[in-house]
Amino acid sequence: MSRIPNLPEREVTPESTFLRRRELLRGAAVLGAAAALPGCAEAESSGPATPASGGPEALPPVAAASAASELGEIRPAPREFRTEEAQTSWEDATSYNNFYEFGTDKRDPARRAGSLRTRPWSVSIEGEVARPGPVPIEDLMAPHPLEERIYRLRCVEAWSMVIPWVGIPLGALLSRFEPTSKAKYVAFETLVDPEQMPGQRRSILDWPYREGLRMDEAMHPLTILAVGMYGRVLPNQNGAPLRLVVPWKYGFKSIKSIVTIRLQADPPPTSWSLQAPSEYGFYANVNPDVSHPRWSQARERRIGEWSKRPTLPFNGYAEEVASLYRGMDLRKHF
Ligand SMILES: Nc1nc2c(c(=O)[nH]1)N[C@H]1C(S)=C(S)[C@@H](COP(=O)(O)O)O[C@H]1N2
Ligand SMILES: [Mo]
Image (cartoon, rainbow, N blue to C red; front, side):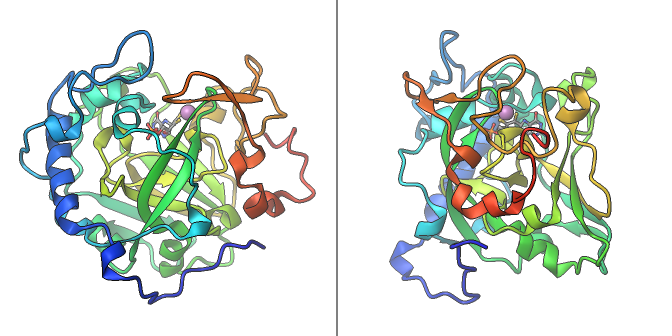
């Protein structure tokens, strides 16, 4: 199916190549500060994300997120899982966000997501599994070695980034709960709590934010659940404490702050296809040949660059995933 090998369970990686724990702890402390300071990531109104501060290092450390001690060591991304393209700056990736639970402006999540409490956090595993139930995030992650994945992220709005995620393969996690033979789709839901998520006080979307994948998409080795990025604990605005990353699909599939994972027989309704079915489909595979009704998808602007670049089929992951859609009309299943 793909040239991506499954990582051997106990792959030996030289100690020196691990990202260091101390760095992670410092990163987490800084994230706590970033989240707590409204306006610290204020962007120029003319363009995306030029933070007013000198970046994370310039912020004073405050109470470290309890997650700090949980990231531990991270397996560096093997070649199959890393693009060598220039990485988007931390500043841009953490201050130019879509997270409508905190508002619709790109700068709202960085300014307002400090109100999200990411511990304690429990994920409800439901539906067609032998072992359903609520699982504290610590238990959810514990058996899985953390891996780095350096992926392109292509938003349906025609901008893109390159982000070094830290996470685990979704497939490995799902397997632990023993999906039944009826499990054909996976549904995901974001937390609903208007007290913590001020954007939910208005019906911008029909909350909770919902997403879904076909089972084979969910099990594909490129699909991950991320708990960190740039070697650090995931900032709230990027979907802490747990978000999906599906690099060959438009960014809206990569649902943030997940509280429910449900395996089921039928395709789940998804937020953007409910909102505007003619504009956003269930599959949402990146496709330069299928225009959004209001704009072309042929090109994209890489955040931090000025000229546009061509958008690649499946966001450049066609070799790995095109076979999942063999025989399907990708204009119909957009
Ligand atoms: N719960 C939730 N998840 C979400 C969104 C959202 O509004 N709410 N926005 C999506 C969109 S449109 C994109 S492009 C990515 C952006 O991720 P980033 O802010 O980490 O770059 O998150 C996706 N996940
Ligand atoms: Mo997006």
